[in-house]
Length: 224
Figure 1 (cartoon, helix red, strand yellow):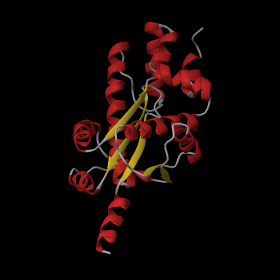
Figure 2 (cartoon, rainbow, N blue to C red; figure 1 turned 180 degrees about the horizontal axis):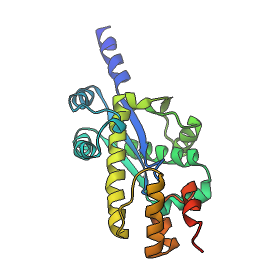
Figure 3 (cartoon, helix red, strand yellow; figure 1 turned 120 degrees about the vertical axis):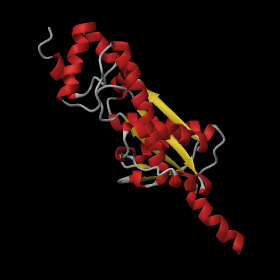
């Protein structure tokens, strides 16, 4: 009897958290991270004060990510702008692209020997898109989609890993084009995009930006 009650909470604690970064950023990749958390690592993540990456400074995110990677089995999928644009041209739907990335991150983690029956992600669309993608590979998992899922520690840890990878890759892309690529999709972003076109030509945009954003049309207006 005691053994059953001891194992049930453990089974409830064990979960994979999934989150993405770069979805709303014109420049840089789309990154999806999956993190496996159990009773032990849950305590360690609490001590590290892991929380939703939106509530942590970029500097702290970059410090925290290697520690999370050390203690938690994880998978990080980064879809660079060039690949993102190719996939978007085929799929033509951001939710489907996200589902593909979520399924890929989960699949990679399960392939590394993580045994887990439950995953939690933010609510972004039809969960069947993710489940179907997994089932095609013979994977079965219970997926829980929640609004504000980042309040869950496993999802918060995934959000930190995804954001850290996004920041590192955005910095690398900035170095490649010799222009600081800002986050988000603001007028400052439009200005940086115009700089890139002036320096390198409009074709270079597809290697650093997500072309389906409205920003592209705004930026190309005025360039013949």
